[in-house]
Length: 298
Image 1: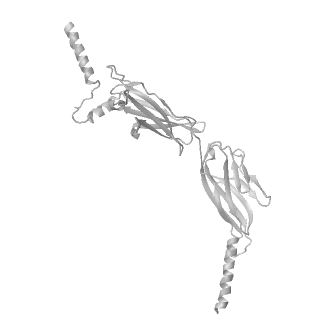
Image 2 (image 1 turned 30 degrees about the horizontal axis):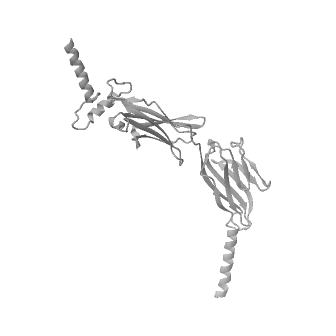
Image 3 (image 1 turned 120 degrees about the horizontal axis):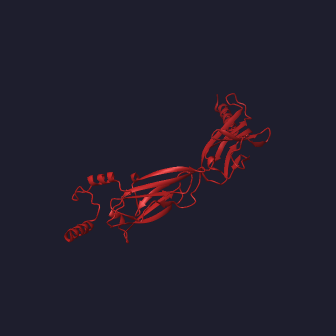
C-alpha cells in the first residue's frame, strides 16, 4: 500500500477517535464545600459535559441514599427521599441547595449522571454513567469563651491545684489546653470529658497539679492559669484565673494526695533529703519557739 493509501486510513481513524471523545459523557467538576457552619446554606454543583450525548438522568445522593433526581422524560427534578431531612431542599440545573443546615448534614455527597450516546459502537454501551463524591463537614462555633471553675484563691504546700475548664457547646469537640504562666502543661496532668447537649458537644478539661512555690513567682506572688479552646481553624478562645501561694501555718488537706506526696519524696532532688517538708523552715522554728515558751511558763 502506498503512502497515499495509508494517509486517508489514519486520518479517518483520528476523526473517529475525536468523534468518540465528543460523544462521551464527562464529569468536569463536582463542587461540594468541605466545611460549613450550622445554619448556613449549602450549594452543591455537578458540572457535566454531555458532548453529542443526550442527558437521561441526574441523581444526588447523601451517604448512598438518593436525595433528588432529574428525569429527562418528565424534564424536571423531584425529591426522592421521604421524609425530607433538610429544610428547603431544591434540585435544579445540576445544582443542589438546602438550608439552614443542621449537624446531621455532615456526610458524603455524590452526583451521578447518565446519558444516551448518539455514537453506536459495538464495544461501547449506549448508556453512559459518570459519578463523583465529596465529603461535607458541618460545624458549630462556640458562642463564648470557656469558663474556669473549682480554682481556689490560695494553695498551701502539699496541696493539689485542681480546676476545670468548660467550653460552650460546639460541634465537633474543640481542642482544649491548660497553660501555667504562659507555658503549656503536660497532657498527663489533664483529662478531658465530653457530654452531648442538644446535638452539640460540651467539653470539659480537668487539671490536677501539685502546688510548687516556683509557680507563684509572678509579681504579687500569684500563678496565672489559662485555658484555651480551639475549634478547627478558628482563632482560640481563652479564659484566665489567678491563684496565690499561702505561707500560713494552717493547711487545707481536702485535696492533699498522700500517695503522690510519697512519690514526691522518693523523687526529691539530691541534697534535700528523703522527707517532704509540709511547712516552710521559718514556720517550724516559730512552732518550736512557742512550744519551748509554753514549757517554760508551766
